[in-house]
Image (tube, rainbow, N blue to C red; front, side):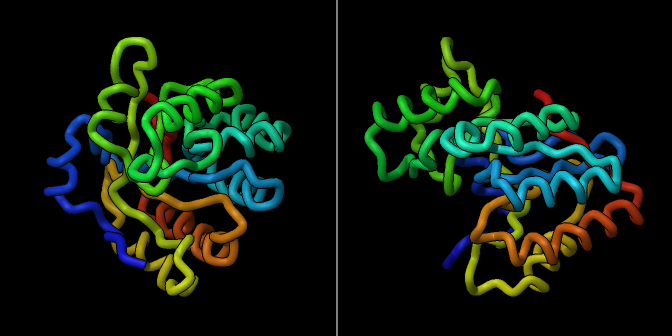
Length: 208
């Protein structure tokens, strides 16, 4: 599976209206979690975040939010932000525009947020412009660093290193609270949180 752990400058230039990182005011950093809520993995993440008084942003799949309303409610009650990750995790490159937009709008019935992260990070320029236009006015959030926790070829130790070796203020980091990522996430996240705490980082939710 090919992907870039750290987003290169040229990719940010291709999609300048997306949010790839945030202003590095002090030592703020932004952990994000895609594909939940999950009945076991998401509570694990929330428990870990609570240990460090850390806030994060959860990009939820609509059908999962509908199936696990209690977990979704806990995310909000504990002060984290949520974002729309579509209802059925559609790939924008492989979907008809109408189907793609309808799926995102369906997710909005369960996810009250203007933040949107395209599944797989794949979205066309037309889709991007439509989501950001009057009416929806969505903020499309990408990332600076991706952990690789979804990748079968990445070990738990490598998943940790993918994040730990690329920590800098203002960066947006992606994990996944899903079955597929669970083994690597449960290994990497506690270590990442410990490292960030020791280095004096303030872990914040995305609020733009």
